[in-house]
Structures are given as structure tokens and as C-alpha cells.
Amino acid sequence: MNDKQKIAIISPLVIIGTMYPIFQFLGNQLGNSIGWYLGLWIYWIVWGWVFPWVMIGKDSIVRLIRPQKWTLQLFFMVAFPVIMAAIFRFIAGMEYEKPALWFLFILISTNLGNGFFEEVLWRGMYLELFPKRVTLRIVWSTIWFALWHFAPGSISASGNPIGLMIGSGMMGLYFAFLAHKTKTIWWTMIAHALGGLIMVV
Image 1: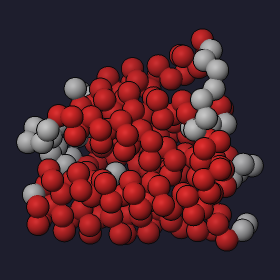
Image 2: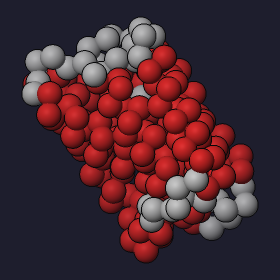
Image 3: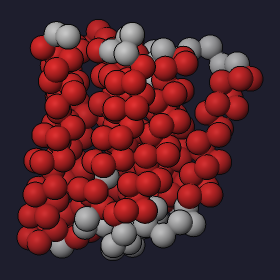
Image 4: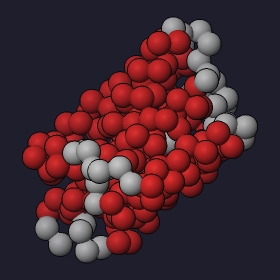
């Protein structure tokens, strides 16, 4: 196992260990709604962009997000998590409503932030670094993707980070499977963004 693979294995602990106190601090200083958004922006830039850029490089990221030919099978594979998001929307703790902030800002954060940066970090980086280790590329990344949601969920409007963690883990497992099958994060980005949009509306 090389150094980058070792870093990728321990990085989720560092992500949660740094982001939880940041969310708490921002929530206490700026209020939960603004703190939640500012915390997400920090997470997206530092962990969703800079960290994967250093770990796997620009060329790998570009290759992982390159569009692929649309097939009927892919349509159903992408539609499945979107339909599940519509169902999860009614589980306590899964909603993303932030009525105090501008709706367009919510849409940007859901589609650009989570749909892009989380897929680069949690699916793309592990897909690239562990091409022959399915347990690390699917199971390990999914467990930590779910646990990571405790940090933003701790100051979310719902007040139920456990529901968010469970739902995110279920969706994350499917996204990891989809990325594994297609060898790209293009389709997971689309499904994640559409599913996130459903959570907002």
C-alpha cells in the first residue's frame, strides 16, 4: 500500500475531526443556517477539491468526470437513487430546508457542492486510488461518507443527524456501486445532484 492510499484510509477521521468543530463554531457564531452553509463551503473547497487534487491530480479528476454515452441501463441506474431520494425525503432528518436563506443559494449548494465535490472526494478519489480493492472503494468510503454527515447534521434545521447519516449511507453505498460499475463519477454526480435537489424542493 502506497502513502496516498494510507492517507486516503485515515483521511475520513481527519475530515470529521476538523469539520465537526468548524460547524459547531460557525453555528454558534453565525447561527445554524449561515454556519451550515459556510461550513459546507469550507468542506467543499478544502476536502472536496484541494485534497482530491493533491491526492489523485487534475488529470484523474477530469477523466473521472468525463461524460459517457447514455444507455437505457444507465438511465435506470441513475433514476434509482433519484427515486429513492424522493422516498427518503419523508424520513425525519433527511430534509435540507433552510427557509431563512435564499432559495437559489440552496440550489447552488445542493447541485454544485454536494453533487460535484462530494463525488470527487468520496467516490472518485477511492475509485482512483483503490482500483483492485472493492472493500475500500465501496464499503470503506460509504461508511465514512455516512459518518461524515454527522458534522453538518449536528447543526442542521432538522436536529436529527442520525437520520441524515443513515439515508446518506444508503445512498452513498449505491453511488459507490454505480461508480464501481461505470468506472466514472459522471453518473453519480448527476444522481447526487438530482437527489439533493429533491431534498430541497
